[in-house]
Length: 476
Image 1 (cartoon, one colour):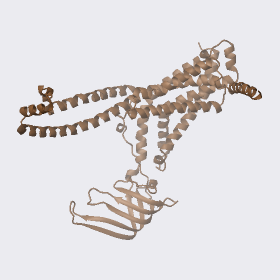
Image 2 (tube, rainbow, N blue to C red; image 1 turned 90 degrees about the vertical axis):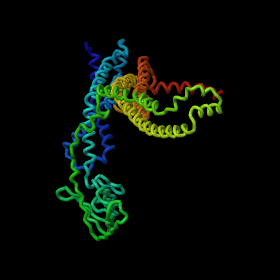
Image 3 (cartoon, rainbow, N blue to C red; image 1 turned 180 degrees about the vertical axis):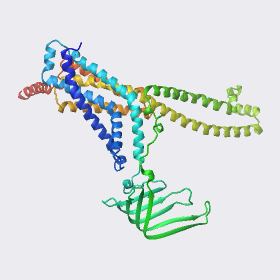
Image 4 (cartoon, rainbow, N blue to C red; image 1 turned 60 degrees about the horizontal axis):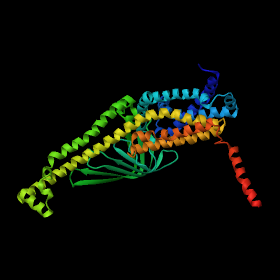
């Protein structure tokens, strides 16, 4: 049965947890948009598309926001109880720390379950929808997305470079338009000193009204040296680009559905099993490739091995006369060259399959580790709050940020090392848990024994004791 103490602690935890969760989620969403701001802003998106995209982003960031929310809210909860001396009253009643941590421990387990459900069932779908929509947004090509000094290749058949744009975004200078068309003999180039860039009223065309420039064209038969270069100067020239492909098109979800980020644990396990069989088959394929194609290998086990070097050569010549030996060696040389080409291709495919296998294993372990992170960070936050005995946002936020940054960096370092094939997926993805769990156990032990680990007065008393003997020695 739930007792009053359990209700007190859970009630003190729920409010800060909900508040910190949405604040954390908001910060993470802002971080995401900060990374992709150049690809999203100025696309002419409607509010429904923006809202849908934000919803998908929020869904993918929930498992990362939950551990931080659990950490910060647990520090705040136990810090508030310590600051108001409720922890002292509870302990004086003979109730140990582990007993009043129990309801929040169970709550953290429940949050771990929610995080796992998100990781395994909701995130693959949200990730698929988000990546599809993000791709559509990025490839939707607005006219004024052309930046100064950057080659813009989003318009089919053209590459555009603008040296300088004025503040109005329309008047431009030092324009280079490079038209590449494989049906023509040679690419055409337009160079102009200045111009104005506008969009037609129906928003279907991008118009460049150029001034003082040159148009270079080459004409003639393909694969012929008898070609003609035509250079035409102009005072004014109008170049029109079709923007029909600039509209936001809906990409089919199946385009990204086989990516490892879009799979749940069952699908990942099936793919991992297939990839393990494929990678294991490369050794057998290489052996089968080498064995029948190098006939000279059969002489390696012959009795002439034990003879001296000169005797070996003579024996080998007796076995294989020059008339036979030279063509055979040339044949072997050609076979080895062919085998090398085949094995190089196999090596590239093997590396790609191994990397793909690592990515799938990494994602499989990540679904578990990101869920357990809620419990691990609770085991750090709860005893930490009871030790510092400070509520509010100030000090708890500092400790929460420190430990979350440690968790985040360890998790990212582990992922990076797995991708670079420095660590195995299990070791890399569980590294943050292996490091932080002992810290949580240590802090729980200290909190159970009323540790003065973060008590400033405790360190002041130590300093005073250290200074007194020194002062006595100076007097003598």
